Amino acid sequence: MNSLFHDRVRGLNQAPLRPHAQYVLYWSQMNRRVSGNHALAHAISLANSLKLPLLVYEALTCTYRQANRRLHTFILEGVPETAKRLAALGAGYVFYLRARKSDSNNTLYRLAENAAALITDDYPTFIAAQHNSSVPAKLSIPYLAVDSSCVIPMNRFEKREYAAYTIRPKVHRLLPEYLKPWDMPVLRQRWNLPLPAFHTEVTAGNIDALVASCEIDHSVAPSLTFRGGALEAEKRLAVFLDRNLRRYSTDRNHPAAHATSNLSPYLHFGMISALDVALAVERHGLENNLSSAEFLEEMIVRRELAFNFARYAGRQTECLSSLPDWARRTLLAHATDERKPCYSREQFERALTHDDIWNATQKELLLRGKMHGYYRMYWGKKIIEWSPTCQDALETMIYLHDKYALDGRDPNTYTGILWCFGLHDRPWGERSIFGQIRFMSYDGMKRKTDSAAYLREIAWLESTGCEPHPLQ
Image 1 (cartoon, rainbow, N blue to C red):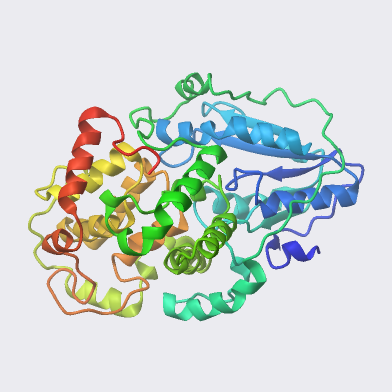
Image 2: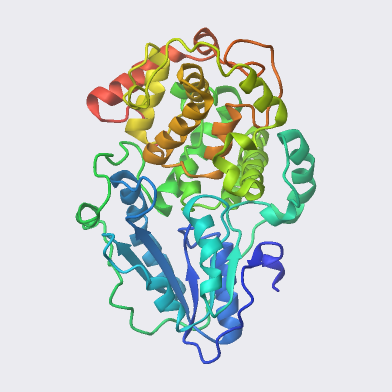
């Protein structure tokens, strides 16, 4: 195996290569990009070794959990640039929009009938994890899952890590091996076969009509802030390097300061590579005598911890049973504590609590499709405090993220939600409802952050529908 892909590839069935095949097939489930994509690179290398062209298949179905207009729009906005870059690479590209539940659901298998092998993305949560569990046994060709989401391959961590302090030394030991540039191989056989009839042509001008044709939830409007695609991701990275890296360490917990990268939606949908981001930040820091350590801690150590958790927790990624023993014990001991006030899921969803900071975080989610990371911790803690039970709180957080967040359904999402309940944390002082789980207070948020500026910004966004600080 090419050393570039060492430790990134998992064979998920035992089928042999198909002789006399027409192409190698890459199913782009989570890494919706051309640049910095190890799975695509592995597919190119295999196609070259077999002297075959490469066909890339990407699909968007109406049947995923909480399928809605916001998520569909964001994904479709990236398709024209993907098509352009794949054409320049010499690969074929099929995009299939399954608009209605009655539409065909076997297009992958139809394409696989003429493929030598199928390469896809190794991803530990949501629909990709389900596909990678159910599809391989149904194929008569090799099904290879390649990890292109993490800087350090998930396979290099052989067990579940229980906190940042346990994974950090392992990350730093492995980083020299993986935090380095690499080149995409050149595809030798250009695609010259006709595309199947189910291919959907996506242009900037027909996205709204395509979304309107889909049997999905149309009540969730597209983000006021984020547009999908690799070009948008690259613009945001450039802005972060130029304006924000120098103040990231001091201002990252102040949402109105806009010192973060805002790349999480693009990382989730694979529109930009985590490795490429880390390399760019490291290089910019060295060239400009800026510290990149704090950003790389979040980008690599914390993110790799989240993927490690999702890989080994499996179906328990969304469950309180994945919490450490001390957290489950203390929450159980306080399960009957009085919750006052106590809000319904609808009240949470509509931002109808008594807390203006909390309401602003929820409105940010509703309008932008993303919350500031530090304020999202507060958002989650208060849902625990004001829900009838911890299970209700967990289900509310997952529901709201699935429905509104462009960076939801992600290892970082589930890890962040369960962190609110004690995952990857330690015991703190005893108090009602939370027991020994870390608590966050309204007064603390006002003291530690410029909450007044944040409230003004969200009020402006809500009243005008316009960002006061575009591309920040």
